[in-house]
Every structure is written in C-alpha cells, then in structure tokens.
Image 1 (tube, rainbow, N blue to C red):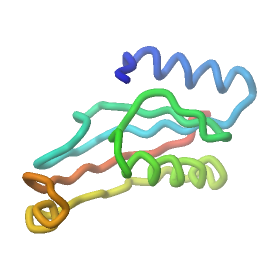
Image 2 (tube, one colour):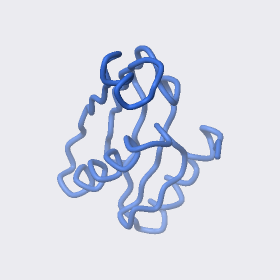
Image 3 (cartoon, rainbow, N blue to C red):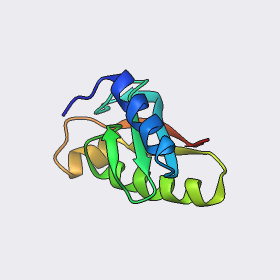
Length: 107
C-alpha cells in the first residue's frame, strides 16, 4: 500500500499529539536492487503501529524493532541492510542491493 509522504508525517504528528512516542524511518541511500526509493518513510508509534514503508519485506520488521529502541533511548540510528549479488542469486533474486535507513525519534 502506497501512502503519500505528507500522510505519513500527518499520522506521525497525530500520534504525537495523542501523547504517543513516535519514530520516523527514512531511506537515505540505495544501491542496486532496492524495494523503495530514497526519501521513502515509515512512521512507527510505541505500540508498533505503522504508516508508510521503507521496504515491504523483512527489512521493515528490523526497522520497527530498531525504532522501538530509538524511542526508548532517544538516540537516532543509521541502519545498513544489504545483499551481495552472490547472496541474491542463492535466495532466488536477480541481483543484490543495499539500503540505508535513518531512524529518529519524533519530539
């Protein structure tokens, strides 16, 4: 499901206004095969509710876990996920890729 950038930020703001902790994850770098382009965002609240997407795959679960830690600690993180061309072939993908996601707490 594709959600407009403004809708993601509006949802994050609504969660904050409701008193929830919120983190925002943003795709900042990609190389090779990447499910979402640079600038894609995912808002996560303290209970794991999500709006938007940075991956659509297993990366998203890892990002949510890191976002929960970022909310608890208050320190942003730069996450790095990647698959080499050789690893990609082994798991049935045509090519490898890399994506970096910046996760920060929304104050």
